[in-house]
Image 1 (tube, one colour):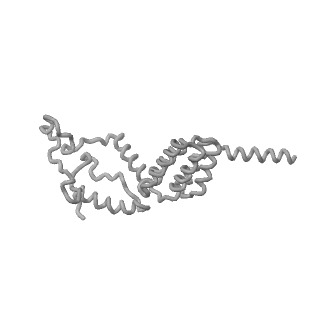
Image 2 (image 1 turned 30 degrees about the horizontal axis):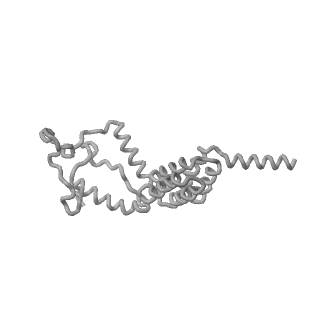
Image 3 (image 1 turned 90 degrees about the vertical axis):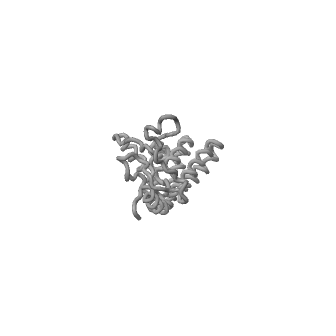
Length: 208
C-alpha cells in the first residue's frame, strides 16, 4: 500500500512538472504581466526542465516586452532581445541565466499595453477602409512631372526650425485628430505623456 502511495506521489509530481507547455507559457506570461517575478521564474524553470526550446521562450519574452511593458520601460525590449541573442550565442544550460534575467526584468518593469492597442486600432481602421489619400505635400516630388500634380508643394522641413517641430498635416484628412498612441502615466510613459501633448499641439496647430 505504501509502495502504491509512493508511486502515485511520483506520478503526480511528474504530471505537475510536465503540464502541457502551452499552459506553462500562458501562466508564465500572466505572471510577467501581473508583475510577479517569483512566479515568473518558477514557470520559466518548469518550462526549461520540461525541455521547452529556449529559443521559443526567448521569442515570447521579446513579445511580452512590447505587449506588456512597451515604452513604460524602453529598456525591456533591449533586455529581451539580448536574452534571445544569448540563447543563440551560447545555448543551454548557461543561457538560462539570460532568460531568467530578462524574465525578472519584464516582471518588475512598469506595465503598459499602449503599443499593442495602438497598432491594433490602426490596423483595424485600415482594414475598415480608413485609407484616405496621403496629403499632397508629403508625396514624393523629386522626379519630372509629379510636382505638376501637386506633389511636395507646400511641404515644410521640420529641421529648419530650432525646435525641430512645426505645424503640418501628416495623416489623411479622415484621420486628422485620431489618436492611436495614448501613453499611460506608468514609468517612462509619464514623461512621454506630457511630451506628446506638446508635440500634438505643435503639429496640429492647436492652441495651448
